[in-house]
Image (cartoon, rainbow over all chains, first blue to last red; front, side):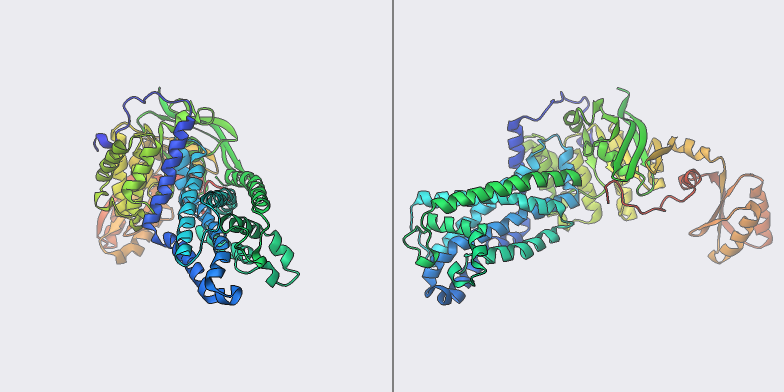
Amino acid sequence: MTTVTAARPTPAELSPSVGVGEGIKQTMTLAWRTIVQVRHNPWELGDYSIQPIMFVLLFTYVFGGAIAGSTSEYLTFALPGIIVMNMLFITMYVGTGLNTDLTKGVFDRLRSLPIARWAPMAGRILADQVKQAWSIFLLLAIGMALGFRIGTDVWSLLAAVGLLLVFALAFSWVSVLVGVVAKDPEKVQLFGFTALFPVTFVSNVFAPTSTMPGWLQPIVENNPVTILSNACRALMVGDDTLGTEWHVASATTPVVQSLIWAAAIAAVFAPLSVWALRRRV
Amino acid sequence: MDHAIQAEGLVKRFGETTALDGVSLAVRAGTVLGLLGPNGAGKTTAVRIFATLLQPDDGHASVGGHDVVRQAHQARQLIGLTGQYAAVDEMLTGTENLLLIGRLLGVPRPAAKQRAHELLAEFDLTDAADRAAKTYSGGMRRRLDLAASLVGRPSILFLDEPTTGLDPRARAELWSLIRGLVATGVTVLLTTQYLDEADALADEITVIDHGRVIAAGTPDELKAKTGSQTLVVRPEDDAKLPVVTSVVAELTKAVPEIDGPRVTAPVGDPAVLPAVVRRLDDAGVLVTELTLRGASLNEVFLSLTGRPVEDEAEPEGRPA
């Protein structure tokens, strides 16, 4: 064996703690890692590129006419909600990735390195935000190609994107908890399908609340997916262009409600996740 | 300093289970300690404490003179860890895996790349450098895992069952890599449930069982502890094994073990050897091997614990 694997002859001066600057660098490195992973796992890219496009095409052309009368009108209603739904599904990758690290021992390796204790988690969530931004961009682009029009201005659009990212940040903690508790990565995906599908479909993403049975309407109205979809509709399409069925009086109420939901989700799930993680490792 | 790794009275409980029940050990700088014990003995728990992944409930541990709880950050700068499962990111290539660790350790990108290439070459992974690790064989993953723990040139290395699940060839390759590392002055704590592995690699061995140290010393000291020697007889014709077994049983008054083509049995009296020769000659059995050797570590373990080493299958280290 050569000098390649030789130990440091005299250990260099040991640093007493990790600086915040170093921690941020390490977070960026770990986020880079998560993004690079996608290159070797094109299926994942398909999940947050092709799948949402399929949803848009499917709902617009198969159900659009029946639900809203015309496909382009339907797209105006449905696209903001589809973006919300897609955002929730993408957050599941935070949990799947974390669970893979935990079950494969990568998490232990990271914790044995002299890096900031919060960097592995922060890196995952940062990478998630990049994936989210990509996915929102992709859905808006495909929507516009099919006839979706921004009815407000660029600032409102940016506000909508910001709101989606903030909500994703909060909802990532649900995913983290599932990732920590689940036995293997497949279970995290299974949760994504069995829990998120009903939550996203029992909302006004695809059809106006007024078309649903009376007993279901209060549930749909109070579903945070509905609230966030309303906020995004108001910010992207504007109040006037929306028909009466999806009409939102103003963006303020749903935006504030969405932020409250985000804060509440983070307040419950962040400490719970950290507690569960401490128990697991 | 004299001891690179030190532990005093380590206790770790997981609920009702006591994984470590007062373990003390010390590893001199530049030597290899084999931590030997069956599944569930507490080996992984001990390594996880040394690697700062787990805090002991009682007692203390230090690496390179730094307490693993109070000075965890300093300790982490000295150690490398290769866990029981190859902890590589399967979605990344070999190069990317090593680059990731280098970057996390604050090595600038070009230098980290250079280091990755060096290590991949050293570990015979250059051809697979740009393939995702999920396409690697078990042996290749372990080598990449070991390489990953060496990116920061640690002076203290923890190897937790580094060859479990490897085929004999991959195992031999890993052994020679570990020997090479030791030659460069790295201090190694190696856990294993394979006695031949501890025998082959370790300068000293600490045997633990049920979270307690039950024996410690050099491999030869441990073998001497059992006092007895082992008779080994290999007939030329495998069909004669039953005859040999009955002769050996009668003369040694022990229950012989059949180990492939060989019959082995513990003996207290060296005079048994000529007696065996005479009896086998009378029976017309030709032997190709007939030796009296010191006890193997397997026999040591059996005499220490009253059961063979691969007996238990409890989950190791973590609460179930």
